[in-house]
Length: 103
Image 1 (cartoon, rainbow, N blue to C red):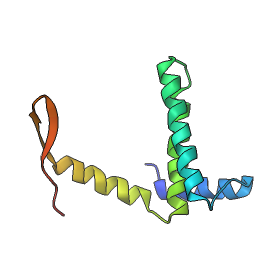
Image 2 (cartoon, rainbow, N blue to C red):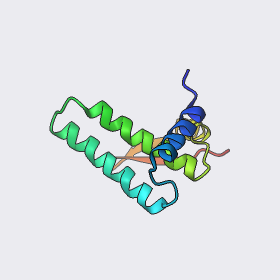
Image 3 (cartoon, one colour):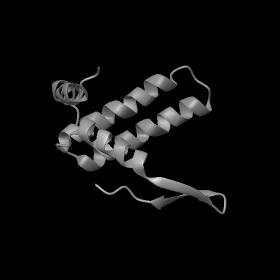
Image 4 (spheres, rainbow, N blue to C red):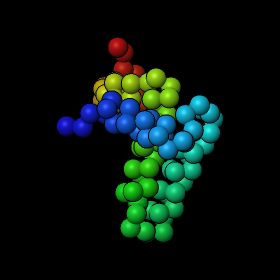
């Protein structure tokens, strides 16, 4: 099983070791967005490196989470559970949430 908390800390340490940004939150969001765009372009152009580009997106999200002191593993598990318990109904051809998960 993957220890996302350890990987999150490893990603952050690599950023420190290599001299990458760990303070400018706006920049990190923009760089993450750029990585998502690269992944989309790789998929759209049917390139072989789509997986690597998606991995870059995840790496940036892990680093950003560590910078912001967010336990991403906990948040992912919480959100998966929340989504699992939401109810949807197709209304006018659109999948619409009709019941929200209550903790």
